[in-house]
Amino acid sequence: MTRAVVLFTSDLRLHDHPPLRAALAAAEEVVPLFVDDPGVHAAGFDAPNRAAFLADCLADPDASLRRRGGRLVLRSGPVAREVRTVAAESGATEVHMAAAVTGYGRRRERRLHEGLGAHGVALHVHDAVITAVAPGRVTPSGRDHYAVFTPYFRRWSAERLREVRPAPRTVPVPDGVRGEPLPSRPAASVLSPALPVGGEKAGRERFARWARSGMPAYEDRHDDLAGDATSRLSPFLHFGALSASELVRRARAQGGPGAEAFVRQLCRRDFHHQVPAARPDASARDYRTRHDRWRTEEEAAGDIAAWREGRTGYPVVDAAMRRLRHEGWMHNRARLLAASFLAKTLSVDWRIGARHFLGLLVDGDIADNRLNWQWVAGTGTDTRPHRVLNPVVRGRRFDPRGTYVRRWVPELRDVEDRFVHEPWRLPQDRCARLGYPAPLIGLSEGPARFVRARGRD
Image (cartoon, rainbow, N blue to C red; front, side, top):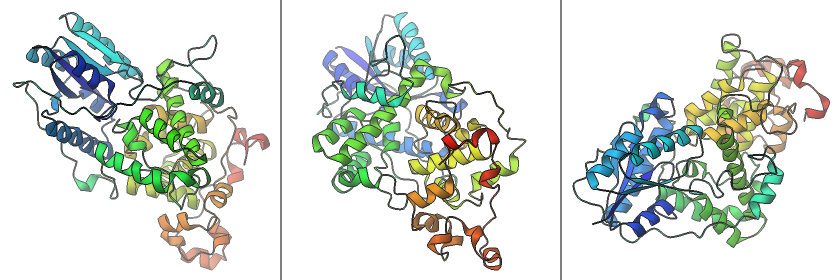
């Protein structure tokens, strides 16, 4: 009897899963395998919020596989060793997996090729499983990736996506392959209180609801901080509980300005992934060199602590940071404002902010998180690297009535609209009674290198 292994990584779903389909076509029995990689723990990517969401994302395909006559096999240890062991135990002659999009994932693939090949087991790596368009498929002349989004979007939009396939009806799994118990969610005390439930079923239900009620107005409302009109699908995409290709196809089929705007955001996710795929060091080092000096964690300890706690004195920044701690999620516009304040106004190294985000964001993604931070810091793909996002101006634009601010900064719940983004303009005695901190720094006092008329809002 022929057998194959399907190695799940950041593609924890059964719908639209090319490696699983290919394995089922090639073998009579298949071992669906997930390896709990100690390298992920050592790198600190197993933050509690993501560990909880991952537990949901593993339980969901296991339940779906059991309804189809199979199960998810969990093993712990170095990935190449565990995959090789499972292949030997099951008698599998080939392994199927999604192509990696990070430097760590690429190194993992090389170890798998070497380890499996030495034992006569073939490794088949499938493109465009984690992203809609595979990194490196579209490139500018003479370069290995696009550094500017707009030309990438034009080329990406012309690409033909693969056909979306449904979940298989049956997944026969051989007996006798040892598996470990699936992980449970960490204790609630270490999680963000309003952390959502993960998994493919939850993700598909969320998308179906949002496509009906939210997508038609997405073009007009996606920047509305208080309206919360975004899809909130980023955690499901991060873990691969939803297929980016399927979302693009379904949005295009629905049509309309909202769907087009949503597809553009899915393209931006692919854009961010193609940068570190070509330049793996962009996850930790400046993509573009800047000749100035960041303040270190030691030099700016008090300012960094106030930023993390949502006590900067700038309401929209504080609302964003408090929501992050409560939900493990943040609106994209709020992420940009909070990041700009730390990097551009306080002159703190962007890596410090990126690590804090990664510690709480349930969708904490190396490509999206780090490339967005670099964009804001002026070291990434922004064509206007000296741009400074003014939290007062942007707060008024994206939260004109102060509804978002009052929701997350209750000290300001009774402040009038005209003062809610600048509470320091209230009469001094009233301002003192709010219990809300004064601004850490005046916006005009930021580092002179970022205060340039052509880059300010």
